[in-house]
Structures are given as structure tokens and as C-alpha cells.
Length: 50
Image (cartoon, helix red, strand yellow):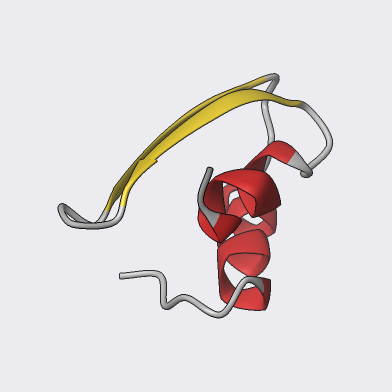
């Protein structure tokens, strides 16, 4: 499991996250989690949100 996946899944309301670092994609299932919170979690894991 990647650091990004772990970071996203640690955000309140996120039920699952699948990350493909090669493609630069993440698919997140959540309960109305604000995009800002998801972006902050990715940045905290040391990755850039594009």
C-alpha cells in the first residue's frame, strides 16, 4: 500500500482509496469529504496534487 493511499484513507469520511502513482491518479470513495482535505492529506504524504 502506498503512502498516498494510507494518507487518503486516514481522512475522516473516506471509505476507500485506490492510487496509481504511475498514472498520477487516485479514486476515492467518501461521504462528502471536501477536496481540500484530500489534497492536504496527499501533500502531507509528500506528494504534489495536480
